[in-house]
Image (cartoon, rainbow, N blue to C red; front, side):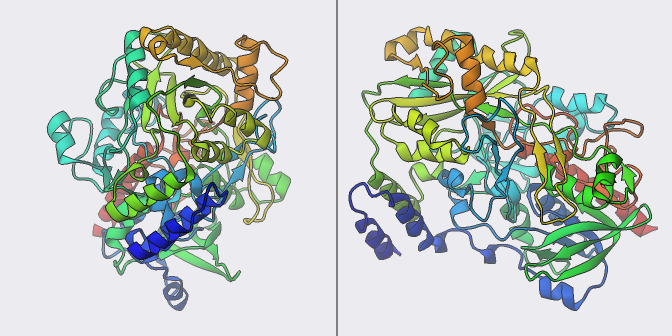
Length: 623
């Protein structure tokens, strides 16, 4: 392998625009050190077709939640469990933390595009925001930034206050802990009151950070009275610090790797990949199975004797439900789909909106300009020695939480995601901007500053949006993509909250440490905003409408709530109202979005959902 890598590095000449393709090739020829399909449960399509006996449980969606549920239910050797995933197996590249943005627009990404919304996503090439979503075993846990944040106690207590018994913070904390395995060193230092030490998914430090600008930024926020947090899943919710993530030994730990790889040889666990779930099979108001279509367009109806579980995520879960006649009656009638249950499926769509056009700039006198060859050197170091910048995500794990409306509150309204762009590092900049679908014209304005100055993207993220979106079917065909209305910034309150972050950053700009290093807030010359005076509020709102994007956290489209709640799709046991034998277990059940990255809460929901199923059916089986 070493000689192969050496040949790949030697092939690079000058500043070839093909440099990153050559890097990818270098990784591909070395994938024996990375993940492969043999690390996961095999595709048992032939077994299923040869023996179409009913399963006990059929789980639609092999993403974060589905991987957990399938693993937990198949712990009972007497239950036949089928897990259906539309995508394939994780690629070797997905193992590499630093390459997360380069997984966008690959076969592992659904690469959705939201519907046009006037005054939003103006900086994209199509004037429509892009939404990445994992189309792969492990789902978005294979594509995400691996940041592991629970949220805060108020998030979950608010769910319970809406009538969802058993979903308060003290109720769900055991399931967070059940899912995760923090290192012995972390537990020895901080204890296990709020985190787990023996769960399925390893949570570790990112281990490599070029921390110069981060340390300066932390000094600045401390000067303004904000604490620096040793870790982010404790009892303090306001402050800045470096998060831990779902990674270990320089490799991503997806839900599929954590939950399915260890049980890949279970005889009672059947996994089918590259297989579409078209609709739920119904007998009256009871779910009895699922219709599947394979890549050869062959369809088959499979039965479930106990339950069908939809874990397809906040975009595909409402699609499957509505195609099965479970959804808003008026919308189903428009498409000629017989309505089995009139429920607000697809409503209550919430997402965290991130603003990439708020940048700090400075002359880093100790920095070294990056060249394309540096990336091949880094790839070599990573593959041969498991060290260097490829074991991390370029500083994205440095985050902050503030409440700018109420400085005395314990609970944040804004999260900051930070992206350092070293001088000359055009590849990282392009990766970030391409992943959001920004136009070439806008990208060129960002890139003008890169040759001679370091950039620190300080990306304010709206944690509790008042603007609510919706998902609808495009047609009755399961192969057609749904219509996604994000409705970003529909609420004036959301706009005001985001614009407050500019004043916050100006206050940091005035700190002694920022002045010492000459760090300034950049006024990006955005096409479409040049009519406004730089630094005017009109300019900043224009900037906001051009350079905001998803941070990949859609939730809420099959909202949890008690019977009689007109906004609810599932009850507190995650059973679909009015339907027997059907549950939804994924992020779509969240009534209100959590205050942080959503992968960890999704793991918790799946652990709790699987536990409820096991308790219910184990007692029934005993009878």
